[in-house]
Amino acid sequence: MKTYTIIRARFILGILFFFPFVILNLTGCATLDPRQVDVDPPNEMPEVKETNFDKPLADLGKMTQVYGKRVFIQGKDITDYTGLSTYGFGEIPRDITEMTKSALNAIGGNVVYIPYTPVYINNQMVTGYSNFQGKLIPDIVLSGGITEFDRGLETRGSNTDFGVTTNPFNVNRSWVPGDVISVDYNQEDKDSLARITLDFNLLDFQTMAGVARMQTVNSINVYKAAAEKELGFTIFGPTFGLRGTVKKIQGRHAAIRLLVQTSVLQIVGKYLHLPYWKLIPEMQPDQVVLDKIRQDFRYLSQADKIGEIQTCLYLKGYDVPVTGQMDAGTQAALNSFKMRMDDSRAVHNDTELYVELWSSLGENMEQVAYRREMLARAFATDAPVQRVAVAPAKKATTKTADKVASDQPGKSKVTPKKEQREERTVKGPTAVAKAPVTTPAAKETDQTTKNRDESHDIVQVLRTQPILGNKSTAEALINERRTAE
Image (cartoon, rainbow, N blue to C red; front, side):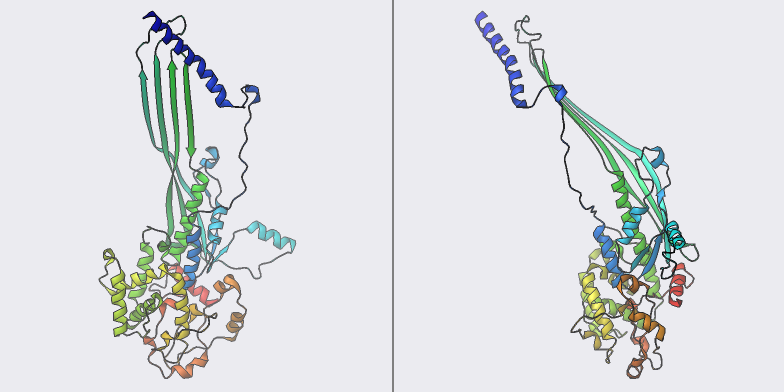
């Protein structure tokens, strides 16, 4: 028995002496001198900043061209109104105007961003480099700021402990300080929630009055989390352990950029009455936009309503003539479209059917843009019933957004010579967005006198100026002023 005890003690001592050698071997060639400590930070190249909203913003620009909408928008200084950017150690940015500029300018299409730089313009005028000639005048002004930043809304923590200890080995206490072996493990997690809210509003540039129902209030949640793990071994007194900690904070500035891009997409799409929610998966439809589309549709005559539905069907890919009359081809196309709809979106009247057709145009904008051009060309031909089936042999630039058929005798309007000269000088998206609305040339008058009544040849989708039931709204005033200009 004594011999067994001696052998076991020697074995344990061998283990104790073996551990330091293992640690030295694991360190390899690394020095153990604390005075020689050093660290090599990673060296990375700059990269392009990309977010999940870059493509939806660009697609919104395409949508303005497909639906024939345009706007000149100017942005005020967008800053932090909570004060935490100053007294919160810079946790959130004080000024997010540049983020807003980048989001507005990323839309493109028929959305023209005009910066608000009065000091710069005044200095340019003083030095004689520039004046106000040729400067664009905005239609609306974007204002807003960070209105909420709530920290510590919710804090959660969890802890896990585990330990096991053997029975005493009854070793010689003169050789080691203890006679047991134990293992201990500890894990601790902690996370907290904060919320940032951004408000945007639209103002009419001429009157400086707010555009009714044109505002967005969006929030984003940001998290902060910390974790810690420990693993310890005790062997006859001496203790060895491993410990690791990590702390992660979701970038407040990056989160605000996403918030700005979301709000810009929403408020521009809402003002132009576009189905912008089609650009973001699982985004709910905007009831402000849908109410406006329903209102405009209800104010149309029965023939105009059928013409609107036929136009949407044609842009969706159905080869139906735009006659303003419910024929067999139109009814068949409607039945086919209803079959493709989800059961949860069943429609029970013509207004809701038109809303579904109108909003579905944003699902395939490349096809709609091409067929929109085909439809505009078709309305310039002789046969109003069959002309929609004529496909152009070669694409060419046409004023599709401003083309409206006029088949009633004596109703064609002659474009003023001044507008014709300006039209020939239009170049680039900015000039296209600024170009005034024109009517068809008078040379079609002789041909259109042989065709049917004007009420059977309506294409509201192609018009840049929507039919407004309430002419006193801010948008109606803006459109009326733009037409006068």
